[in-house]
Image 1: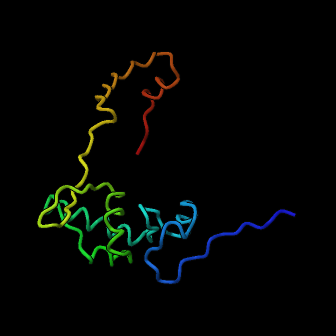
Image 2 (image 1 turned 90 degrees about the vertical axis):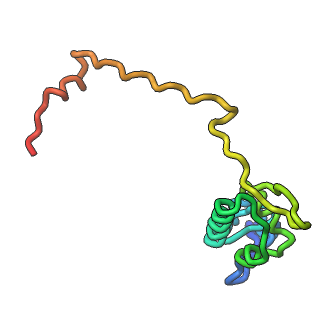
Image 3 (image 1 turned 30 degrees about the vertical axis):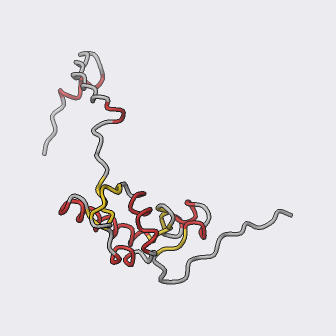
Length: 141
C-alpha cells in the first residue's frame, strides 16, 4: 500500500510570514496563501502591502533605507529584510552613514533590447469571402 503524502504543517494562525524552508515547496505555500520571496514565505496580503510601501518609498526618495517598520509589517526579522527586498526587484544602491539604501532596478523596455516589431497593415478581405458579406448586413436598433 502506498505511503500517504505528508504535507508540512500549517503556519500558526495569524503568522504573517515563516521561513520558506518550513513550508517546503513554493506551490504548497501559494496554495495556503503565502508566496515565497527570498528566504521567507509571506502571506500574500502582507506581501502586497510591503510591495506598495516599497514602491512609494522608491517614488518619493529614489533610494530608501530599510526600516524596522517594513520588517514588522511582514513579521520577518530585520536581518532577512534585505534579501526579501532584493527578491522583489530592488538593489542595494549605496551606503550613507553606514545605512544601506535600496533603489528599484532599472526597467528594460524590451527583452534583450529588441525593438518592437511593426504591426503589418490589415489585409483587404476578398469580395467572395464569407465575412465580406457581413458588411452588407444592416441591423435595426
